[in-house]
Amino acid sequence: MLKYFSISSIVFLIDQITKTIIIKNIPDTQFFVVNSFFNLVNFKNQGAAFSILSNAGGWQRYFLSMIALIVSIFIVFLIKKHKKEFITALGLSLILGGAIGNLYDRVFLGYVIDFLYFHIKDYYWPAFNFADTAICIGAGILIYEQFFKKNE
Image (tube, rainbow, N blue to C red; front, side, top):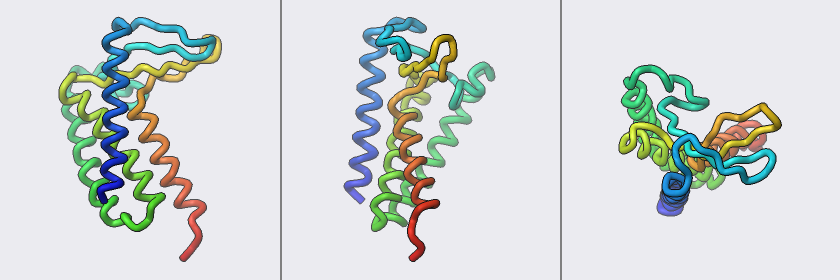
């Protein structure tokens, strides 16, 4: 179990370190152009994924925090249940680390810092962060496992 919680902790730490670097170096809503399709930004996302509920008046902070807390606790139990299945537990560990990273922001800042901003010409993908990346990779691992896992 220690290795899985270590993975989650590393994801959390990288997420918080990268967000701190962004907060200290890029003013709110400003862009740092990296290349023709990628910018670093400092966006405060008060909503969920893709800024859903971002203008809901404030209640979403508590609602999304509770959801993240409940899901995180549930994932701890899932990791324990699947601790002998490395790939499954790895995916769950990545999701847990990302969920806790965004939960931390929501509880202590009131919003989540998003800073990775990709685009093609005038078509922009919503900004996201390292925690979101870990959650997506973890979910991808779990989906892959379900579709391609050999029947035992």
